[in-house]
Length: 205
Ligand SMILES: [Fe+2]
Image 1 (cartoon, helix red, strand yellow):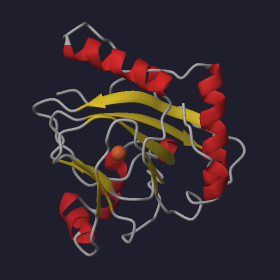
Image 2 (cartoon, protein in one colour; image 1 turned 60 degrees about the horizontal axis):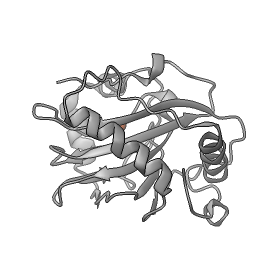
Image 3 (cartoon, helix red, strand yellow; image 1 turned 90 degrees about the vertical axis):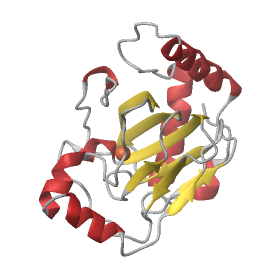
């Protein structure tokens, strides 16, 4: 699952910081992700883009998230491959509360496709159960755009096996030039929330 020493980064997520680990995903897990992506690209009738880590991988993932967040009781709330197809867009947002801590694992990415994070922007939590809830609470997309325009985003290339951990319900994020990129998202929370069945692919064209 993950192949780096998370004890070197204790509490980064608790402090609302992000963390990039280049090439931090195990070969085994990447092979599984590649295989799922191939099925999707071949047009197989993949109902969900879900990939649940096996028990050993899950234990490693929870230990890592626990080190980074300082939280002991964590619930997995998302485990799916996001493959950006024509028509899919990505605008600045904060994820729902159940996706409190996120890890983006790069699977495949065109050079100009980047994950954008706003670490110096507003870090209030989205307490809703949909990303739109936070946008609505601010008063609409224009308000969000005003807010994110006040600070500079980090532009992060997610190459194969690269990991980006970030506080997804608090930090604004989106993907620049998303078309053709594939990113696996594993998310957890400390609230005991698992509010989507089987981590269905939520963003259809
Ligand atoms: Fe998101």
